[in-house]
Image (cartoon, rainbow over all chains, first blue to last red; front, side, top):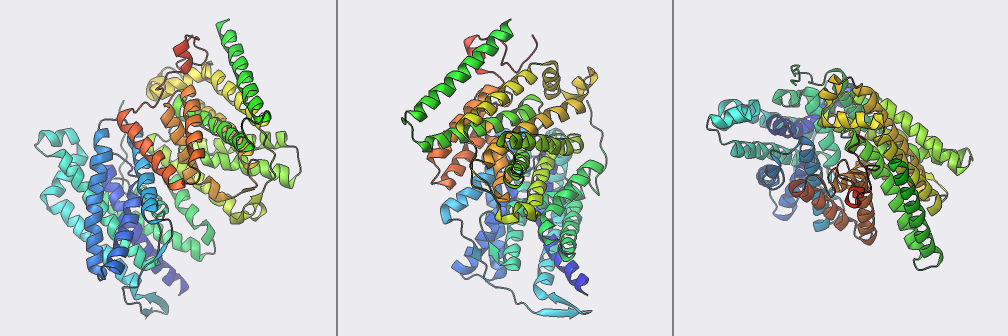
Length: 291
Length: 314
């Protein structure tokens, strides 16, 4: 029953990847930019949650919501300051700017509060439940529940609301959407707000689950979430969820098989294989490039 | 004739720069602390120039250059420390193995374009780092002890060779093919250029030079660890090339000199250094996306002909 336990752990980890990957995939879908700073929004979310819990004595849910709101504002600020002036620049210029923003946020946080890690307070009850002989912590089920709830809310926003319809229209064809009277800039900002909010939630969840946070913690989960987004087909929202969960499970299996030091390499090997053999991802459709 | 003249001008300039710095160092106008700065500067110029060949000339956006630096650093360190071979052979071996790594990475990933290529190269660089982390023979996470063999003279010779190789490649038929790929890959393909071949060649030469720089880099420290070669190192090199201007060799050289001096003075404040770097990156992209020099070369300002020009076409 060791394996069942590992798979449950993998799903919990994967749901964190999925939450970050959703932000990547939404932003990529709408402005074709790999937002490198997204992993750092996740880090900021973890720290906002930490200070909300230890500084203001908030509970888990208020801290989660506060972190989501602050990250959403932060994401919109990043977009307005750094990415909006580059809307018509080359994609490489936008990518370099994103790398610059990522470094700026990381070292800005280190400059303000130092590089030392923090131990996350234990705000969720942690009991183990015995299912078919596997020891499953209530925390990992709780995390999975929150992630699934957030994804359902996201699906509702994207498919049932006016802003969701605008987002889908802009990602389909920005110019046509503008001609139809959609405010493209506001729609892009809304996309950044939603994606960053999800990253903020992922940050708090990560902190509670792994108990250690530090200013450079966003880099590796950010890259892996990007792998998850590519795995599911970048720009496709259900793809990001499935990709994230799949990646989490694969990593857990690699660790459980005794190759824990190689765990970080697994994600990049998957990335390269998927880019070479099926660049459009699991759910993607092949599109031919036009000259 | 004009080409030969520019070539000799470059050699004279190189000898002059070398003589000047050597004079300043031996006459103790500058203390040994500056000798180290000049070595680091030369290594940074080599790295920037080798990445310039991949990004600036061929237009393939690779952000995993530290991976090849790591290969060169580790292989040359194994040659000197474990096998006891002389330093020049170790440098060459580091370069050759890095070039092989470049071929292995380049052949599958150069089929990709734009951001996908960027992410794939980043992924490969991380894989290379994790591989070194897991090999007990080279010390794993604890790192490998390396003796200090890099001298200012050997670094400068390698630097001159690197610049010569890149300039001559750029101005050859192959270099013009690479520039054609940068300008428009589909058009280059239609003109009968074997785009995959030239992309891989440029990538392998870039890796070779980065590997040699890696050998110098590792023998300038007393210990090398896999953490020295993370994506932050790749970004360091990328910042130099972007700031100098994508497509300008002299721009890369100037930016490498500038940034090395800045980071030497900010050595005690690493956070400030990174904040300045990242702000420079963002502001350059927003206000001057072509970098300091654009695709122009410094020789064009003095009317020294086309020898160093990246535009090619004599």
